[in-house]
Length: 287
Length: 312
Image (cartoon, rainbow over all chains, first blue to last red; front, side, top):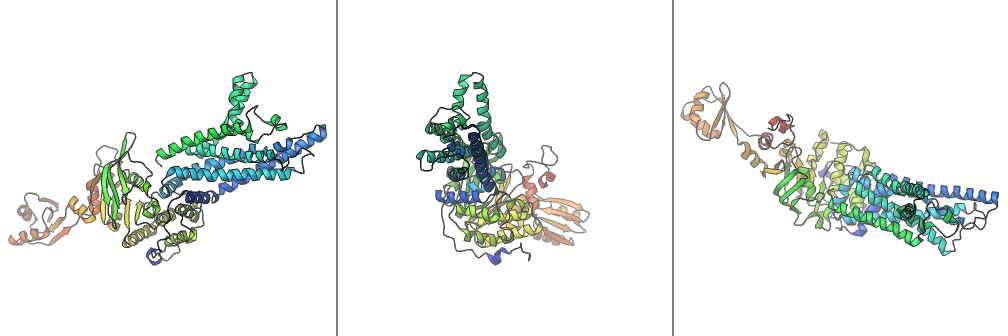
């Protein structure tokens, strides 16, 4: 019993002075979920790749646009906003992975039982987790957009870049953060429903990448109703958060005509429904 | 204090726990004994609110677990070997749990020290041995310094050193006045650690009470008698409520009479005794008797559960 691991409990313990007896509060749950998030390697990886992907895509976008402008002489006024936000396309994939893992990782490892035993009010736990994920991804999205702004500044032709002095620019920057946060929460909600990482990630990527493609094919062959449906798909509607009037319109994959506010609300509506189902199931199911 | 009233849990058509009522009294080590699949883990999960009872209720210190504002200070639970994210270090796992109750790193360091995890606390849990995992589980259960601990199969799969450590820990916690409710399918474990027993089989409580009472009530004690006049003595002792078996020539086993009565009977009749030994049934034997027919899975695969099955 004298090896390093064989501590004799009675020798050491001496019941510690009952530590300040705290209670479970929402603030404590936020702190707990924050600790959980930052102590997993996958968080660093997914957020790091999000930033890298966003900036990388922006650089490619800006460099190509700039080359195109100087080759053809066509002015690209207004392209700047697209240049800094287009990285969302990569970012949405990595934040979807982050969102799904935040909850499905707990189910697959059994951690959820420790979590729910420590804080049996399950809805508060899920709400705290969602809040932390949402805020972290929102901030990461804004950070990625601002980094994209900085690196594309020297690449874009004069007059094409956005000005940080304009309210519209900040709306687009915040919109990118909001879009990514909503996608992460959508993925988080699906993760809570299916309790399986691979399943949740596949489902979200299917909705974001495959569904628009299907409807695009249909509308390409004259099915007008498909165009209408496509407008209201979560990803297509949500992308409106990042678009500005002008050049970016042409760059948008969808032909959505929703305003940024309405588009954002449509995506938020999907997220609310999915989280509602998730909360109901988490409350009802055995852990 | 843990109180269950008519607690039931059904999974579809399968009844895991069938209307059980019991009490775990403060300051005792109560063993929850039963074969695998008897409903022990399900009951323990219901106590801490992870599984919702199909009917009935269970309270901890007078309230449903979920109604406590600070559950970790009421009950600490070691439910499964690893209810831990494999990608997180032991210390960070404990920090996250402690944070839910506003406890800081000081308390985390204390339970790390208490459970001897210091050397591995910053390693990721995925690489932990079963024994380290159990220590971490006990550390988590101790975080809130609760008066009541629930330990589900704490020694299952541990090496001898780990088993010894858990036993010492349980004894220490009990001597410290804490209530410990621990389950096992190993009767020998219960004989060493528990004061009280609740025996469960196929979702129903078979018997409960102080460990020795459970054993005595189940098997009674028998007396081994070695005598050249064994057959004569057997005739003298025969009577209502007395069973006598002859194990080998000159040796009989008597149930239903105590050693003093047998010895006096022999003396009055001039029968020489070479040996007169009261034999207490072991908990193992008591358990076999109790759970025969209550075993969920048995080796033979036939409907009549055998003692071999109970031992599996």
